[in-house]
Amino acid sequence: KEAGKNGICFYTSDINDRLVHHQKITAQLRQALAEERLQLYFQPQIDLNTGEIASCEALLRCFDEDSTMISPAVFIPVAEKSGLINRIGDWVIHTACQQMQAWKGTPLEGLRVDVNLSGRQLTNPYLSQEILESLERFELMPSQLGVELTENEVFGSDESQTRQLERLKEAGLHISIDDFGTGYSSLVYLRKLPVCCIKIDRSFLHHAMENKSDMAIMEAMVTVGHSLGLSVLVEGVETEKQHKLVKNLGCDFAQGFLYARPMPAEQLETFSLENAVKMLVTP
Ligand code: C2E
Ligand code: MG
Ligand code: MG
Ligand code: MG
Image (cartoon, rainbow, N blue to C red; front, side):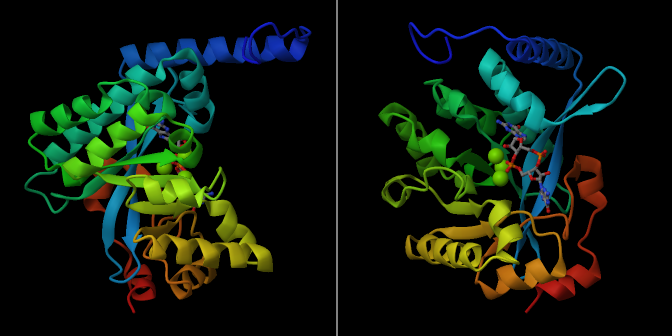
C-alpha cells in the first residue's frame, strides 16, 4: 500500500522484521502514553551576540517499563505511520505550555519553548486553533511558543496547511524550518512561507570543518536566510572550533552539546551557562 495503488511487492523477512518492529514500538508508545512515561527534555538555544539562552527546544523522550529510553529518532517515524503522532503531538503542546506556566515567577519565566511538529499534525484542520487555545488556557503569550517543521513537511503541504502556519505566525508564534538544507530547500517556498528562522542541519557544520563545498553551502544558507529577513541558527555545535566557525559565519543562534545537552525541566532551572562558555560566546 505504501508504494501506491496496484503495486506488487515480494514478502521477505526484512518486511516482516519491519512489521514486528513497528508493532512493538507502537505498543510501547501506547503504553507509555497511558502510563505517563513520556517526558519533555529541553535544550537551550544560544544567542551568539549576547551569549545568553535565547530559547529552548523541547525534545520528547519515551521511557520503557524498565526505564530504558527509546530514542525519538526511533519512535517518531513509527508514531507518524500509525497515526499516534496526533495524540503524542497534543501531549507535547499541552506539556510545553504547562511547563511554561510552572516557570512563571522563576528566572525561566518568559523563556520561549519551541516544539517539533510533524507534517501529519498540520493535516488536522483545528491544529492552530488548538494550539492557541492551549496558550490561552495556561495564560501564556503566543510569542512564548515556537514550532519547528522540516522543509519537506511544509513545502509539500497544501494551501490549507500553509494557512494554519500563517495563522500561528500572525498570532505571534515563532516558526522555524528544522534540519534546513536536507530537504527540498526551495528558496521560492522559503520566501512565501510564514517563517522566522532557519535551523541549518548539523551535517553541514560537521562536514564544513573538512570540506570546502559544505563550507560554501553554509555561507550561502546564512546569506539567503538573512536576505529573506530570517534569523539563522546552526544545530550540532560540539566543539569550540565549530563555535568559532558559526560565529564567524555571522549566524545568529546556535545549539549543541558544547553549550548544553537536552535536559529535564528541573535541570534547566538550575542550569546556567558555564562561565567558560559564556566567555566563548560573548563578543
Ligand atoms: P531535531 O528536531 O532536529 O532535534 C535536534 C536533535 O539533535 C536532538 O535529537 C538533539 O538531542 C540532537 N542534538 C542537539 N545538539 C547536538 C549536538 O551537538 N550533536 C549531536 N550529534 N546531536 C545534537 P533527539 O532529541 O534524539 O531528537 C531527534 C529528532 O526526533 C528531532 O530532531 C525531531 O525531528 C524528532 N523529535 C523529537 N521530539 C519530537 C517531538 O516532540 N515531536 C516530533 N514530531 N518530533 C520530535
Ligand atoms: Mg527540532
Ligand atoms: Mg527534525
Ligand atoms: Mg534539527
